[in-house]
Length: 312
Figure 1 (tube, helix red, strand yellow):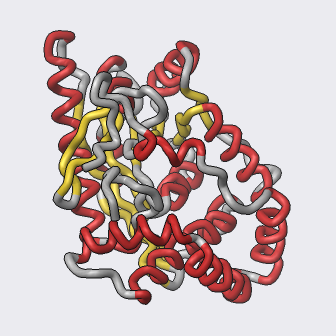
Figure 2 (cartoon, one colour):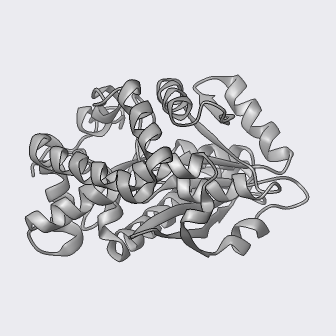
């Protein structure tokens, strides 16, 4: 069985990190075109194009289709039907399409319910803010939109440089006036900036379900089989002695989203001796939360890769 891990170092293998080097389809030109159409013709008309894009990827993305089928089999407990597979792709395409409206401040177009916002707010103390750890599960943008809507709940995103550049380019294409708030990981200055943001009472968001390069990982049971998850986001929270919440925005169909916040850990009182154990326990709780929401909203999973590192 292929493990997806290097047997000597525990670093992610090709299966775990292929997402980082796999070329993204599409272009900034077509993203600008789609944004222009969406904002001028409205969400209803432009959703026709979303269905066309979903149909294209359903037919002409065999590798993503294979991995999506593997995930759906695990989460549904049965072989995935073509309807299941198309619904997952359409859910993904819908969240990308709706990002255009969220980023341009068109919140009134959506029916967004929120669960646990008070929990997230309670993690912010007089000592500073908290980390929000998400996943490629649902729409992070729908959840982050709350931070832009409410002036006292600003959310900065921390991500690796290559992804940060891609996201910045995409955000500029969608909304040229948008002030991006992204911290590029990979250097000491990034940790200092995260510390400063948290000290000022802001939230800092990170993704917790994909490892990059030689980043340390832990294999944790997800949907019946171990998968590699990075320890990095929780190590950052532990070093900075900050609380951690899970955050995601699930697409429910039509114009409806459900945003959830759920506390994962609080590292504010740990000591150095207990840090490693606390990090691993937090990761275990995070994966358990991810699995629970996978089962509740199975078509909101957007890791179209060999997540478990096993043959499909």
